[in-house]
Image (tube, rainbow, N blue to C red; front, side, top):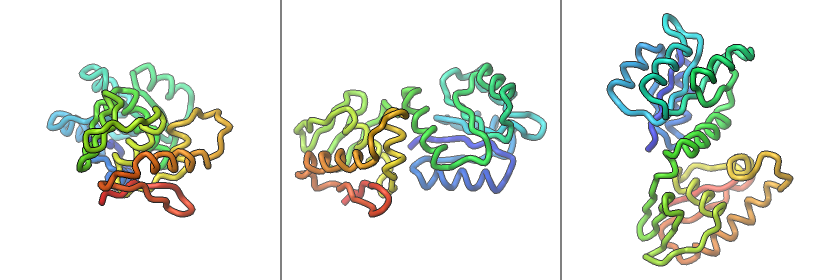
Length: 223
């Protein structure tokens, strides 16, 4: 499970973000200031940091500068009320990876986190095993009881996403935003076509199923 550090001095927002991420398959740890963040980073290893800019004593810029002096790889997302170009420019020059302006959409934050983890090479090193079904993202290979299942790249990514967060519902729009180009003219119903193909290829699998959540999208349910 990926571990995310949330640094935000607004207690209610901190609690909301952590709760949402914990319910979305991540392990989120909240801190109210940079000093608390330094303590957590000293005690444990995190896969990604979500941080406010305007915090007491040590702001997000200084936090990012310190983190980058020690770790060039961990993704950093700023969530802040400051939407001026100078703040964005300063953040990116310090080495942050993404910048969201408050009020933030938690579903969008989830998508950005997933994209950053994939881009940083963290998510792509994962392996999923459910009974006799195995997905290896490094090898881009899926097998069922030892037999390889031929999946296209997009089929693989969609299935890997669903199985990474069993019982979590992903809307068609969320899946389109993550796995299709942003300028695509394809309808969200294309997701239905892919799910039909996946179900056909997995018809012999007794370890999980892809369920339709009517009016929303899809989820994977382990049997």
